[in-house]
Amino acid sequence: MQKSKLQFKIKKSLLSIFTFSFLFLFFYFTNAANLYFEPAESNYAKGDTFIENLILDTQNETINAIEAKISYSVDLLEVKEISTGNSILELWTNQPSATKGIISFSGGKPDGYKGKDGKIISIVFRVLKKGKGEIKIDNNARVLLNDGKGTETKLETKSALINTTGDKATGDEWEKLLKEDKTPPQPFKIKLSKDSFVFDNQYFISFATTDKETGIDYYEVLEVPLDKKNNKVSEWVRTESPYLLKDQSLKSEIMVKAVDKAGNERIEKLNPQNKAYYLVILILLIIFSGVIFLIVKKRRKRN
Figure 1: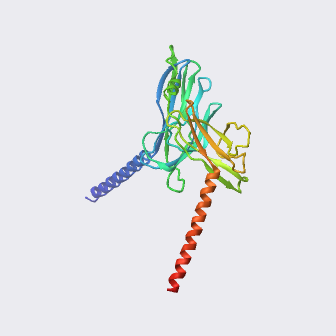
Figure 2: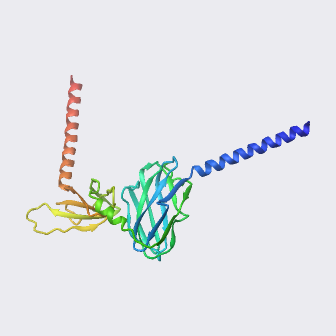
Figure 3: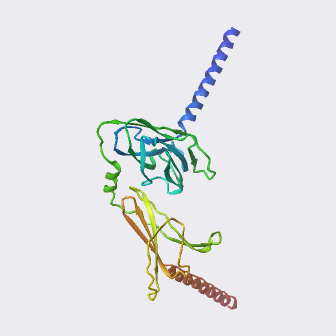
């Protein structure tokens, strides 16, 4: 009888351990964020140009940063473009770039992202020859949670399998997307700043925007003198943010042009003198309000 009870207890303990282990492994693997390519497997021919989208499934977590490297065969494929169009990421600490078979990038979304089909980047490849290959995400890829601590979450990655043994080229997917893109980049603001730690305390501007379809290609800045007597001809300067102003007297209108990869443009303007004018008005209003407050206060004391 005692032997039977002992066997029952052992079986019960083993069942509990098994159940606990199963639940632990289940939650361990199901809670991992997924980083994968779309399409996951494709067939092409020499001369084809195709697009691979890098997608993130956060698995009900809220993330705010991602860093990754992607490898591919330079003998089989050539990177024509890397687009951030319609990306869930808004800030790029390391803009996506390709060098010697490695694509690297890092970026984030300040207010966080939670979802199943968050596009990170689109990579445009051209097939160089027949063969089979793999577009692989490096094992050191990291996804950080939006928890205020930058906690690294578990991550599962999946490669894309490419078969380029087809006999007939099907076309250029990227060229088709460029022709369809008629939408300019999103509106944005130009911020005028001055900081002792940046550009030796000289005036500079900062700016950033996004493009929903093909992604931002480049920015240009133009400083137009407001003094009509100034006959100096201004020219657009291709640059990045932040940009050190040439006219430190702030007597020029500042224009920033954002151009997407399809050639669509968005131009925003800033007149530093208007900003200074409104600032002076604001200060005068504050002083005037203070004086009125003191006068009213003194009168109440007298009464």
